[in-house]
Length: 286
Length: 296
Image 1 (tube, helix red, strand yellow):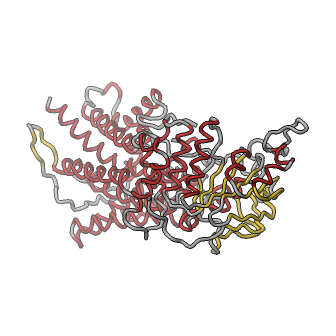
Image 2 (spheres, rainbow over the protein chains, first blue to last red):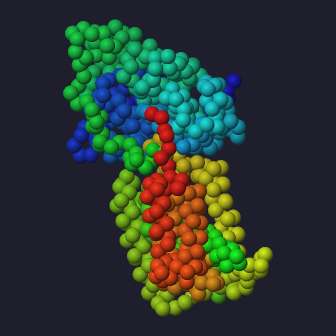
Image 3 (tube, chains in turn purple, brown):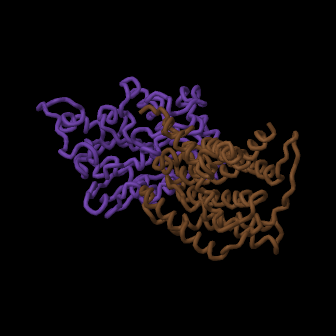
């Protein structure tokens, strides 16, 4: 109905014994292994500073923007290594990330944001590819079609999240990386986004979902990993994890002994990232 | 009346040339956050190449070659000198461009010496009489070509993939990278385009009624700089507006110099900076600067 994504071979995302360091001293990930099977939805849970975003950066190739580097282990998609340093290569391989905090291009219109999302798309697709991708996005988010000519900076938070996801879909991802799509959204909007992610998955896209909202993530995912200070603490089928005491206590807010325990790191730079991650925000924030 | 119109036309012609240079500043700034202080020496390079090539090749081929060569040099400055640097350290890169400027300028000044070079443009000292106003043909050519070139660049911002990539990178480098935008390529192209625009500007700055190309011609970029800043630095339409404002102010100050003699001579030279300071006092982000509302 919406055309089909270009065939880049089916495959799993494999993260093997990955270690990541920022600068010379801060180790953000130690020996993390994780698999997103082709066609699966995998959730990655954890508190602030656990290394969730770092893991996504290693997959999408943006570590270098934060002066991070892979010090051990590998990331591969569909059997081929992702260098981990080139976001363009990741997009071409079919792995596209929706960044945390939406990061839409506020000074550009909704339509232009979507065009921008298609910039890294592999050229050899059929001629009508961009139009097909846009129709698919407008099919998923009719609200965006209504606001096509409006500046993205003036959309509501929920609409911006829709746009951020729609923008990523313009590159026809085989694997979509979502970084905290529920962040700062009203419960109703979280439900709406959940439905859309389910729909995108049904249309044939694998999903790696990073969330602090464990209830949402575990409802969506078939498999989940819990990161704790840079290591995989727990892993298993989502339904089973949801029943474990530890997850219930730490991430589902079902107070067992009262204190919602979080690793001590917390706060700015908790990911081990340099304190000003959004490079030159003052200027770039349009 | 005639003088007023005369002065206005002169100012617009001057402004349109500043706009070519200012647009170069803005494009590089948008692509990389760097203020390119080497723009003046690139301009001089373009002018110098046209001057030494035109006798052998003829005017138009010489101009095209000079524009292409300046674009290439600008692209190389980005690739070779700036590429390996941490792109977040804009101030370091900016200061490196000052270094590049001094090196290029010193070499070109050595070659030009005290000479006054002509670029071999076909207009010479011809004049046109329009509605009772006499204007040098070169001024008309300058306005016409600038309008065409600037219009093309603006259209490219809006409609080409490169333009979209540039605007995306300008708003959010990481988000643009995540879309698969090749930031390095966008930036190198921005430098090359800025170089080409500077080389073109050199032609109109040295054509009649200006005497020709001197080793100090590159300093003109120092006037396009306030134009870009008062326009908002990251706004191409702002740069255009700022340039016209500066051009007209300068022409007015020069044209009415005798009436303004109480302020001393050479008011035309300082006028761009006066205008910049006044505008920035009133509007700190420039005329069309971006301090846009973005919901988070």
